[in-house]
Length: 431
Image (cartoon, rainbow, N blue to C red):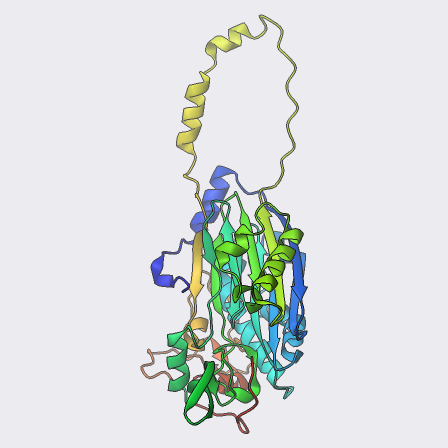
């Protein structure tokens, strides 16, 4: 069972950045990656883009993206998400933010980007769906968003495992089962007749065994694209990240996956994990793995100073502080350094109201007359507050948001069980 947010406390990002600056530990990590796959249905896709550049309010910065899409009922949703999800996320981030503001805005932008990608894909009237595990790495800060049952797991250099995704399988997530039934869906196993039930728990109509995905327009809007999001900061020693589809995690516990490739470079590690998974269960499903190593930058050795001539500098040495004294003084001036991964943000609610109304440290970070999801312009008075329809709405001022356009408001209502899309009905088994 994955760790819940109540099991830990998050650390403010500003505190960590100030500590970095104070200790002069601002070098960016070295990143190496590899991927491997064995295909059964041809519905797994990966997206890797390193050294992405963006212009900030305080200069130019780089970041990397690693993502895995495990499609079902066809590959259309996985391919569409691979091609469009990053742009949807970036479009939801205001321009001219500094580094701290940009990182702070990522969790909400990821929620908006996932929902926009799902909404745009469903307008194509295609019935496939996909899980997504999507990771943005900037410096030592890693932000992960996920729907479905693919997983991203980080092992710090200190040896601790950190789960960056949530499992949205109905079999293992009671909260999601309760949410779906509250929205008008049914949860049960496949009935073969005579009262005999087989297989995993599924959502009806549709028969999907996942509670969250992108796509799946014909299985009910309560199968939502709202991702679980987790943001962490690694220590300067780094760590190894494994992103894999369920073809790996159904066969290997996380500890075994990391142990079987210990000491291998990223490319060889990904191949070894896939090989181990297939040996355990056979090639029953597409089996895909991405391995990302985050390591401290290599520093060139400084040239050794030439040997000093005897007697030179004797008088200077008389007035110089002892080495033990100067080292001790430096230690008092430095702030304490982190010994491992520190949590910055974690949220998993399926409610758009909860996920988009998050307060941010920067005023006017998100534009007032832009839809918080699809980014279309909204004329004054036409936007619908994300608070609309709450049972106990707080007292709102007319200009408070975030706001949704009418189309995105209907999407929100459908995901909450308050609006049924016309024509939604049962479909063949999925996933």
